Amino acid sequence: MAEPQFAQGAVDLSALAQQPKNSANEPAAHDAMQLRADNITQLIEASQQQPAVVLIGTTRSDASEALRASLGQLSTEMPGAFVFAYADADAHADVAQMFGVRALPTVVALYQGQPLANFEGEQPKEALVQWIQAIQKAIGREPTEPQGEAAPETPEDPRFAEATEALNRGDFEAAIAVYERILASEPKNTEARQARDNARLLMRLQTQQGEDPIAQANEDPTNLDYAFAAADAEIAQGTPEAGFSRLIALLRNTSGKEKDVIRERLVELFALFEPSDARVLQARADMANALF
View 1 (cartoon, rainbow, N blue to C red):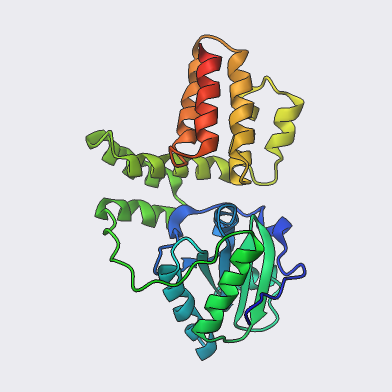
View 2: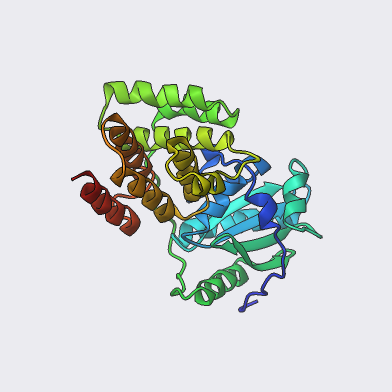
């Protein structure tokens, strides 16, 4: 299994991309993102930066559980090599159907939102390492060598637990309120600010189901509400630079309070990414030019 078997339309991405994102189950380095139909676009977005390895399995299968344990260990031992997600086919048969699963367990690799490779059945850990490294080579990256057991992670701030519960039940407003309380006492808490802004984005995206905000904004480029909705959609699709450019173009042609509103939304969207992200750095420079 040293070379990956490339998938042939194993994933119906057109269906997946229409599902709302949910940030509640962020993939930890030592565990899998718990994949459901309502958070699947989170996985697609994550695959823009690095391969995503999805295990569709069942607790009724020893092979599934063995694969889950091995891939969970490798997500720690091969940091940055892949994002690991697990879908319980018994609890979420719709996800298994989206991935075109014919047998359990099935493992699918995605990159930049597209199916790249897949296999069925159990594989030993050593073969999984070779498979992941082959995927890295296929996308032009240096293979990652497994490391020893990683140092323990910094414990999550217990104040975030309430927000996580709210996100799990789809109550974005309650989650945002939790983050706002943290920021009221700690204005420089970047983790809380990023989580709040991400929850705001998810809440706005939820209202876009069944619509094409990008087409609406293209037809009426001066409409601020349409531009904001289109920028959100472009970020969700993994093309944030398009969303930034859209709002900056609008910024150049507005004045007064509306200019401040656009600037504030841009700053909020920038906060969803690492400050060193080249797309954010360029957009910040463009925004400064548009303002002054």
